[in-house]
Length: 64
Image 1: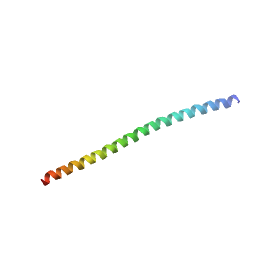
Image 2: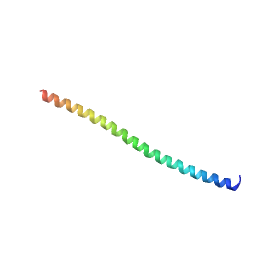
Image 3: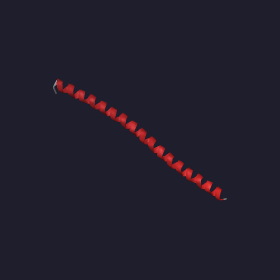
Image 4: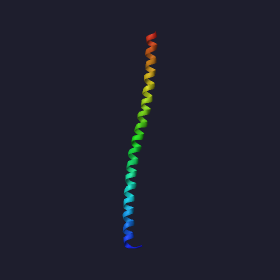
């Protein structure tokens, strides 16, 4: 393999490694936000259930 092709090959490898590294960083950030969003939705559902339960208790105490 000629010297110029070796240089191009090494440059290509460096650029590819950099792209893979950036992809993994971005994937990590996206995964973090997805996890946070899921936790938020789960908490929202739990809070909604708690509110319904409390409203039922208030209605029962008002009827008594």
